[in-house]
Image 1: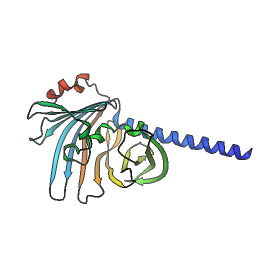
Image 2: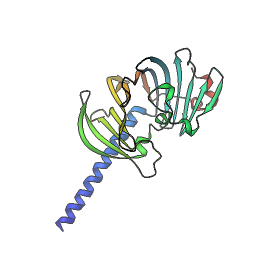
Image 3: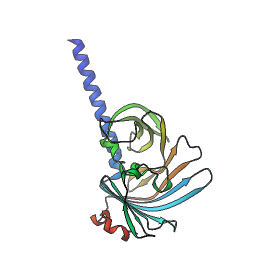
Image 4: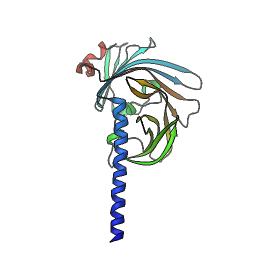
Length: 246
């Protein structure tokens, strides 16, 4: 009888622990996203022999809709990317053409960065496509964080075999994310830093993506503006409107 009671308590405790991990990841995702958002971003692509800077504006609504426009350099200015649920569309101003990305392009690097098109589409899948558990507590950038392991749910259409994410215990900031392939080798790290206040929210203003097997290579994403809960017309997230965004 005592053994059964102890076993029941262990099951209930583990279930509660799992629930907490789910809530933590969802709270962190909700904080980043909000019901809607607008941001201005600078992206620095660093390679051993060259570097490149992009500037862009980005609008999002919920987890399924986002649109971004490149504002510099001149060569890419006016290039637009639209994400609608699981679809990605690209408007190219030089040929005035809108193209839908086929599945074969989803694993290609986005604009030469260390992020893939699939990474952009499946940002929100951390909440829905993975089982989660707290595996520890560590400090990142001076913030005490939950260390949470995410493993794909059965039949989830995801690329990563495992993800480890560090989330600040007070402000739910995502301070670091490690991405592992199906063979459990570490592939990419995304490190948050330079925490700033955006409309009352503490968030890392800089995200550095580092492919671990490519020395001297990184992508640095810096936010100069970040607004939440703004009114965005639904037409912003249509293919017909892409050429009008600036």
